[in-house]
Length: 304
Image 1 (tube, one colour):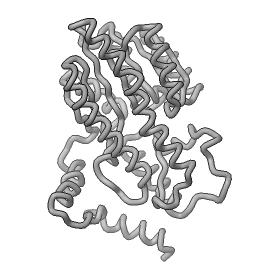
Image 2 (cartoon, rainbow, N blue to C red; image 1 turned 120 degrees about the horizontal axis):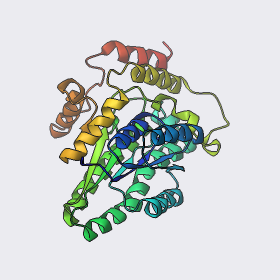
Image 3 (cartoon, rainbow, N blue to C red; image 1 turned 90 degrees about the vertical axis):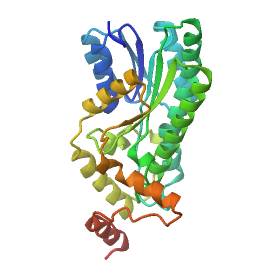
């Protein structure tokens, strides 16, 4: 039997993207799969597919920004399968534009899903995993939180997204250290994908009606962010399936940082940002190596 055989995975955002691909791998590895998503139709379709692979599946519709709904997910998991071995706090959404143009509802939505969704998952599932570890010396658990490369650098015109993803990186690093204080059986990991073809550029389709503004149309900065985001995501050469495989490999090797593009070019902006901090210099122009992109964005925003 493999490392994951006969164990249980809980995956949010399981109806598409990384969540669906992780569910497929979990099923092939012989795991029970708890699949959670806010959108009922993609969830039902995905759950049927994973069940057809031979896995025992518990589909669960929820909004991860709700502490009560995440707790209900934890309760349902315990009732059906017991304590999980892999919790993938993966659900995420995106909004773009100049940081002062985000509405209160924009902030409530993206912070609620991207940050509090992870916090609720950690709060609800970590005690269950620690209790399982204490009861069974052979138990091994992994909590994987989806952040982004936007959690390690700060590209302009996507401030709200950057902020939530930086917070998830911080939460995950702290969780790693906190777990190390109390156990050697439960481990934390953070996933920081770069541009990968998923549905993140169209996450507004999952936005609840109560989180939508009835006011004016999108601003030029928001339109630019949407167009550039769609183009960048669609151009990604690494697939969601490959990234999901990276997640499983990281768990098996107990590696904390999981990158979709673990190469010098992709990580170079992170090194530049850290160097800015260490040398106490002003933030480096993020378009220094692609000045034409910066010129295009400035032209749009300045109306020139």
